[in-house]
Length: 193
Image (cartoon, rainbow, N blue to C red; front, side, top):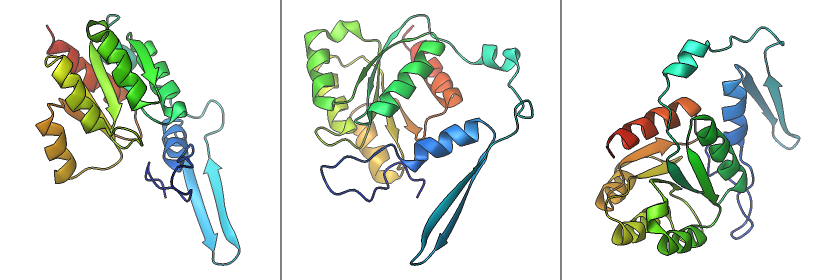
């Protein structure tokens, strides 16, 4: 149920915020989620968070050691608006200039209009209009040199093959963590130099 793409909604109704995002937030805060289900009665979620002051706060040294950007423009594409906003916030804190899109078609239009305006593309794979690997393929036709990072809650040989075939540099596992994004973009940006 914490899989980023699990939903009980019908086709075309969206996928909602998702328990994966809730799980990621709770885990980042040092908490846990307890789930109890009784058939015919329902499910109860209990969220456990540390008492204020109990959670270990990462030292400034640890945060400073994460790779930071130098104002590079990152296109973020995800059909979940909440995840776009979360990624934009993370990237801004890491020193990047994020530009988010909740539609892969609108993102491709923006890229077609100004392909040199972006330094890196960070795209979700599973989207309704144009999946991430197809978006990556279209972007590569316009600008073969741009680094593209794919985000997905799934993994496996098929995804890896599709990603490699369209020149995706790396695949980030959802739910996204600041550390993973920082390290991934650090590697990708270093390859630009």
